[in-house]
Image: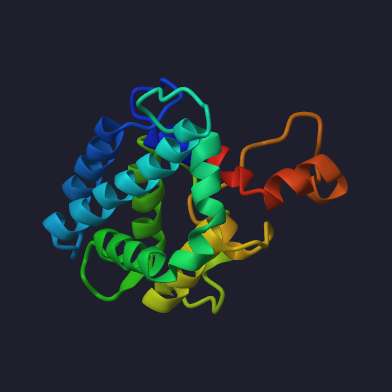
Length: 196
């Protein structure tokens, strides 16, 4: 399931404040070692950023539909390199939420909780976790996770390990090797992983 679709709780193709509130509730139910109020605040805090981007679009002659489309999200994502502190704060809040036993590490099973909680459905993660566990110690340390989170949201390398922070990429029908098709390479470089 794609990250955008996971955030779009009601499946209407738009992100709304209600979607962000539902996502925050999903995460605070898991919470791990995170302060639930801080986690909800950080998750919900992204809504005004996205809404402002959507409102700017409306000022340019677009209809204000009350929600944020995937294209508007992608425009915000393209600017996240300039918001490194906010991306890191979100990564740290997510790390704390997923660190269920509070040991300062994310295990393979805790990573599975991240993917399942974000998407709302169980997902196979056995093939993905080793791509993220760069030192092969069986855990993700905070800095390791922060790097992957930043690569996903603000990076420009579609093949960085962080591309898989939310699980496997969607299958591309008709293609076996994404690197062999320029359309796929181009789409990945434009952060299409949000829609996977």
